[in-house]
Image 1 (cartoon, rainbow, N blue to C red):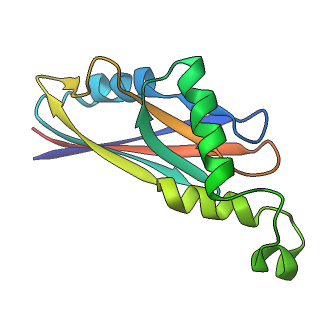
Image 2: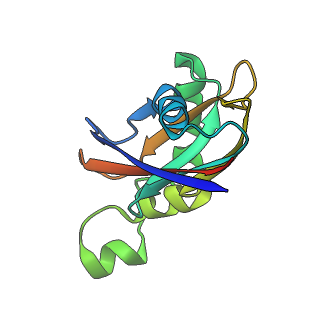
Length: 139
């Protein structure tokens, strides 16, 4: 059993910024030399989420619209009342999607469907410097 850890670092440009990190995750798997196992992709920070989606402009907009319906940005949040930073909805949205995904590695390849990509979703109200941890475990 082997394990390999890599960090993906990038800056987001705006609230709702969505980035496809699938190629970077596959590159990490390639670097690891692990052919069979699992990869865990995890965001550091409570206002960023990691999930999978078909990464195409219409569906990206649909996800952003759905998140606005689920946790509207224009209603009061207790978090905002305490900290006055206006990102209570950001924390809720990130919690709904979750901070990580774990997927199989099969024959050295990330095992995803044809139209399935791994995305990082910025939920905060301002651009941020972000770090994603990619852990590959297997043989």
